[in-house]
Length: 497
Ligand code: NAP
Image (cartoon, rainbow, N blue to C red; front, side, top):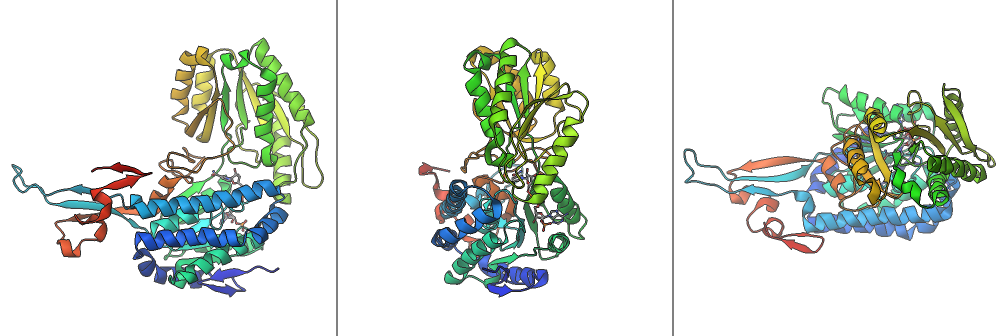
C-alpha cells in the first residue's frame, strides 16, 4: 500500500506546507467555536476510527518499527486512551481554566472591576512525532490529541521511519474530521520520505506565519534546530520540544540489603526493553562502593551478557548507537562491565560500562547502553546529582533505612527532573492527570509543562481576561450561568468554587 500526504482531507502527492497551513488557519475559527461536547465527541471519534483500523495500523507499525506486536498493540490502546482522556477533560470544561474575580463596587479606596479569565486556543499547531513511538508520540499521539483538545487545528510533519503507519492514522483522523462536519483544515499530514527534503519540510512548517506553536518529540539536535527556527521568526512562537534524557537511577545502600540479583536483572530488563529505545531509558546508575554494590554490578554484567540486541528502529539509529558506544568505551576511566550479543540486522549488542567519573559519559546514547558510577557516601553523591543536566525522570532505590539520605537525594533531584520514582524503573509512562513527562533542558525546551497527561493541553492555550465585559458579550465559559465554574467536576468529584 502506498502512502502520501493528506492535506485538508485530500490525498496529495506533494507535502505542500502552504496549502496545509492556509487550510488550518481557515479552519481555526470554526474549530475553536465547537462546543466542549462536540469537540469531545470528535476526539472520541478519532479514537474509534483508529481502533477500526487497528489490524492495518498494527501490521504497518510492526513492519516499519521492528517493535513487537504486543508493544505496538499496547501503543494503540495508549493512543486511543489519551484521546479519550482529553475528551473527558474537554467535556468537564477543565480546559477552560475559568477564574472569576467578581466586581467589588464598594471596595475602598478603589472599587474592583468584574474580571473573568478563561483559556483560549493559540491557533494552528505543528506536530513532529518521534520514531520510537510510531503511535503514542506521533501522528495522533499526545501532542496532536492535546492540541486538538485545546481547539487548535493540527498540521503533522509525518516521520519517515513509519510513513505507512502515519498515513493510516492520518486517514483515521481525517475520517473523524469529515464525519463530524468539521472544517477540512482541522487536520493535515505532511510526509516526505527524503531525508534532506524532510528537514526542509519541517523547517518550512515551523517558520510558516500561520503556525502558532510547535509540539516536537525527538532528538536534541532536531529539537534545538526547530526551537532556533521558531525563535528567529518575525513572530516567535512557543516550541515544546521533548528531547534527550539519560534518566539517572540512584541505588541507596538499603536497597542492596535485599535480593541484588533480582534488582540487577530488573535494571537490565528496563535498560534493554525495546532495544533501549525509550526516552525514559535508565542510562546512568549511581551505585554504592560496597560489597553489595560489587555483587549488584557483577549480576548486572551477567544479565547483560545474556541479553540479545533487538533490531533498532532504523539503520541510522543503529549506526548512531554503535558510534556512541565506541566513543564511550574510548573515554578515559571507562571499563566494560557486561556486553550482550548482537542480534540479526541493525541489532547491536546491549552493554553496561562503569565510569570513574561523570565527565564525558552523560550524553544520551539512544539504545541499550548503561553507565554505572560508584560513590562512597551521600556527601559525594549529591554534587554529582547536582551537576547533571535536566532529565525526564530520576529513580531512587531505597528502603526505610535510607530515609535521611533519600530526603537529600530527592531534594537534589527535584531540581533536575520532571518525575521522581521510587523502587521501580522509569520505562513506562502512565497517561493521567498527575503525570509529568517533561523536565529541565535538555529533557525539554520548556520545563513548565508535560507532553504526557492532561496538563499537556495548557501548552496550546493562553489566558484572556474579560474586564467589565457585558454579560451578553461574554463567552459562555465565563458567564454566571455556565455549568463549568458554578460546579466543576474533576474525575467525578464535585468541587464547589
Ligand atoms: P529526530 O531525528 O529528531 O526526528 C524527529 C522529527 O524531527 C522527524 O520528523 C525529523 O524529520 C524532524 N527533524 C529532525 N531534525 C530536524 C531539523 N533540523 N529541522 C527540521 N526537522 C527536523 O528524532 P527521532 O530519531 O525520531 O527520535 C529519537 C529521539 O527522540 C531520541 O533521542 C529519544 O530519546 C527522543 N525521544 C524523546 C522523547 C521525550 O518525550 N523526551 C520521547 C521519545 C523519543 P526527518 O526525519 O524527516 O529529518
